[in-house]
Length: 340
Image (cartoon, rainbow, N blue to C red):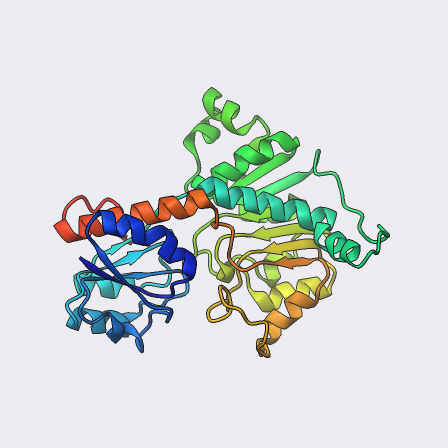
């Protein structure tokens, strides 16, 4: 099998090439992002492998269908960048990596929460300039506070396990709740703590001192954080998003920042990150005014979609992607097929 890898970076070659060779696969690496304009580059390959900011829309899928591409391999969990309906119509299987290292993302989310609360990012900049004043760097104890967790899938559950040691009240929201928590199962309470409970979104927004987001991007979660939900939040609330940028309406978020609603915000994703994140833009004039505005606030930490980026996670992503390629080649055991 010959696979066209799009939107690749040097670290992709390090992890994927050895595993592909073991299976007798050939990988053609492209730095270009996959879209309707670049899809033709996969000519002569059997599959395409894409990442979070590639765009497999109807036009791109139609092009690779004409080229005889057997399927699309996602080296990520999310699939909001793929037109699944068109893929099914064209009989193009789409396989993803549903779980690689939930702990990696959860640990990073906790790191962002601690950093924005205790203003570690600002302290780092100060001391690099030999400024050892701590004025303006006061945070708050998390113990005894309330945290809201939106999304209790594998990453959300990993975050719940981490936050258990902080002695916080934990409010959960997910349309598909963990049965053990709802039923008060003893094992679930041991795993996640006795101070966790599911609530509706309005209750979570109103009562949480901190909110961490761990849900996929769907039509129901698009801009779940908006002007209306922000206006329900406590003044000084901490907000962390390591999931997908479009969960948050950026314009409304900036308005909330200007109105001093937030005590701190930690973002590892941004809804207009395509073409910016994962790239070196240090010598480019940024024209995205919302992005410029976000980075101007002292209580905002913005990182470049790196929550997943650990050795363990990259190894698992490569392993599962190659396994998906094997399944695609044989046409059997498509356990990671996207079915939506």
